[in-house]
Length: 471
Image 1 (spheres, rainbow, N blue to C red):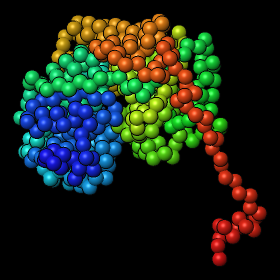
Image 2 (image 1 turned 180 degrees about the horizontal axis):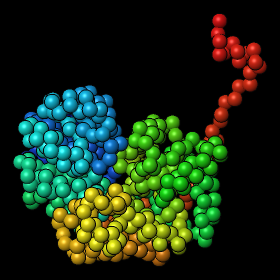
Image 3 (image 1 turned 30 degrees about the vertical axis):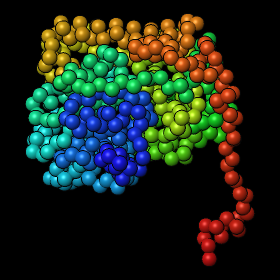
Image 4 (image 1 turned 45 degrees about the horizontal axis):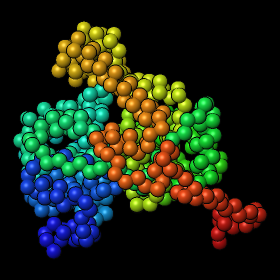
């Protein structure tokens, strides 16, 4: 048994590597920058965890979501690793002080792009030995950095001003352009790239166009109450996620909703309940997805057109991680295209906002927090005119992305084949249950759902009193 396999077995309990894992780990250990694109369920976390046990120093993991950090911290603790911490807003002042004073003692340090802008945190990081840096869910650099979370783009300057070793970028889906954005932002030098096929033969693609929103709602509810889960229902608004959850609860489904406006503690609780099997379904916005480690998800349903093919593939990729056949269903109306575009640019600054921001003192400007944060970054990088042109081009790109996905459902070509083509791949083998266009029999994938039985023991007042106040 070689050293890598020995660590794989002793630390993680596996006897062999999955496809691509060993090659990637070897490149990390050799000190090379690495870009690894592997579908959900292919063991991306192991890629940055295992090499840490063969190198000195700490591993710094830059992660996009608090819930994802907390989940990965818990996973490492479950295998017996105590030298792990997430430096984020969950820490109290006293806890953060303690972590800062002992940062070098941690083997795994999780943090956010925003935290990397903290001067004190940076000074402490510069004083400890960093084995390598990891950008987890690295597609967020391209997907969020330009118009939502500019601190992702600031990582580039952070890397240039901080001596570091190699950088490892991990994601489940990435086009050629996204990979280029990742390599540029992370200042990579001739990185080793491992790009796994995005095809998931165990996921069948079901697409259905309906005439009205009510018809869509009726279809979704009927599918969920009559067929097997677990599943995730993706919808576009917080209001809709709560509405669906309420309707399904009335019909005996163990369900909860999930969206970005919930308290962080509540979101983590819902995620844990779903992962542990206490909930059958989650009705969620796209805030729910990254870091969901649940192997037996049977269904993913979209009641809308997502804002890009990449987003769609990331969300449906949560299904079938146990290797069993699953189904991704997308139910839409023609009007959903305009709604998707509105959602994708709702926080974008208008031309008048950009001019106002550039021409006035920041202290007196009253714009949404997301808009202010984004414009502050671009004011440092571009002129007013260049910023206006940038957001005009981003809006156009958003519209084209949505239209590409809509067009994909409007022809008589294989859905799987078109999805693969978007990522530069060719369809080699078509599974028996492929897509609505080719061949799909949902009854071969889904079985009838067993109704939830709520136990209601009828007690008289004397029995009830004895239950509450036993002698």
